[in-house]
Image (cartoon, rainbow, N blue to C red; front, side, top):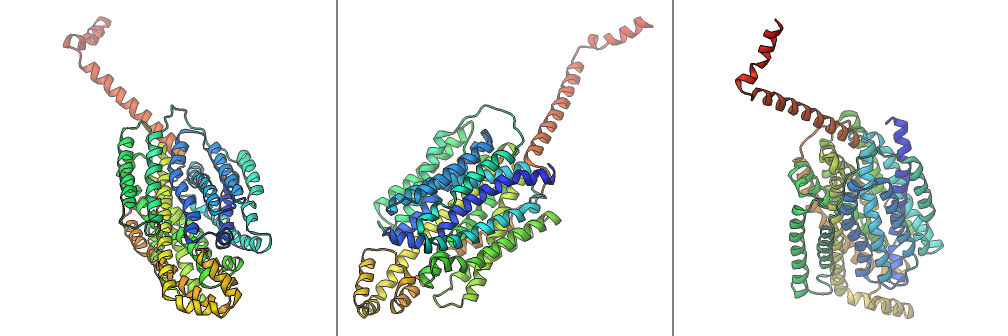
Length: 552
């Protein structure tokens, strides 16, 4: 495809990605307000995020497998429709439970967009040329990620938080039309398809049990309890059965043979840490700005710009360098170092840490995510079998989402436990401060006793300082959990095979492979013909000589 044809094909895809990112980011800064208005607690806040991540993780490999079997263009349009309709439905929620349910459906669409966008990119752009177009993806990511929280904050402070869920609808309609008109994917050979239904059920059950256990253990029940044994045991049993089913399935949901590929296995390990950093930062930095620094939703959106700037600069800059020079490994190692440093430094923040330092820490984390996130998928696509491009791409995305989901759940549980512990220690000081506020203090005390997440920016100074200090300590401890995973990511990237990037797209590689197979088949056929001829008896072998004698 020419440069112009690629840009035309990317138009609808970029707009679809913009819609999904806008719908997700526009709500991020208003979540503390939403949970407060719906009278939810810290567990509800964590579940609103975890529900989306859970269904995203479960559905990603399913969408990836479907991409290898069916029309990819139709699938991504379906994913956008599911995502946006569920997002709009969430705007009518009257309690945290309804919001969590619609966010779960939203995650199904998000899983499709995450998996299919990578697969379609590989269809139309070669790995070596991918960096040339990373500027476009970086620009879309920056506008959606920076503009989304800002727009969400303004909408929350003016029209009300429910309008955050409706803002993506007109963009979605335009995205669907543009995809239909501009995205033209090379046709693939038709083949009989078999969907691995047992694999889907077993994977969903195992992942759901694991994540529910991580989220509820230590709060709804003890870590060492009958509930923990049943959930962990069920997850392990489901995983074992899933492996057995995948080994026997004609069309496995996750072909286990891919793990023989060293690049795929190490990229999966590295992606887990990237997911924890990416999802953890997006969730808990927003909480830090509002609960530990007393910012409004709009201010919180502005205050997280340094992280987005780091992500944008790294993704665009590194993509251009990879395309120009063809080397990717040094940049990924540098990104993993930035990821580790950013995670550790964010674990040291307090409520009164100078914001310039917090900005540097956020920039480092963003740069680490921007360098590693897309490029880990890129190097897997570079070595994956063209017929398994969907499951290979979605495999990395799945483990990134799974790591992020588990990470957010663990970080949220650690945050809730730490906040509870610190509030018990500061109970006397808090009660004294509330007593001095009269009736206003009584109202705040009533909300706190109900377990509702506090709206710190609206609190009087004497009470706000206590909550800011408590939540800052809790959030910094949550970021500390991400540090060992970031270091593990660095180790995995160091051992990745330094395979050169190909200049062929997926369809070109597939055609080349078919041509090679045809050549090999002809060679083998000729050898078989020769061998058959030489196997005749002596009389048969001498028959041509007799013919020549007759001619003489």
